[in-house]
Length: 179
Image 1 (cartoon, rainbow, N blue to C red):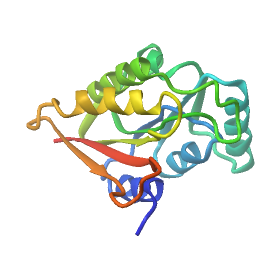
Image 2 (cartoon, helix red, strand yellow):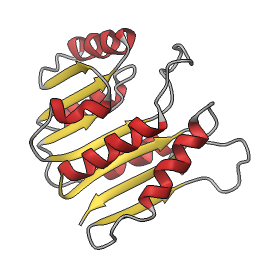
Image 3 (cartoon, rainbow, N blue to C red):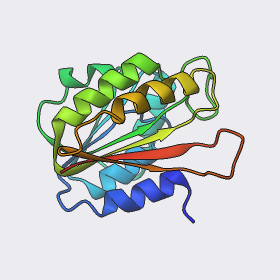
């Protein structure tokens, strides 16, 4: 069985149109690199200098030049992206091996997801990995899921990929597809 991030990437590879993607939380750059290798153009967002430099270094090392790395919050996505997109990835929480006091914020995450959904092309996918075990992770998870449960099912399919036999608040995946 695939871990949530691996499963997300398998689904993303099934997207037919691979023009534009967004990594809404670029972190150490691994998801950005995955998107850059599979899409023609990628935008990558993060608020931390460390995340931005790690992402740029990884892309440079891999000789990737189709990605715009942006030091800003994903809540400001519309300041940078105006065209329709085929994919967006959110890997919520905090920077791995980074300062855990700097993390995604429930309200701005929800607003960003709403904006990203509006940018999504038909058959495009948004992947969101939730971490309900970190300090504001449960609040973020509850807020976003409450919204997604009410999304018009004639416009979007929303799927959850979760572990049901683990009690330690494991990460889980939500996929949103515009239909």
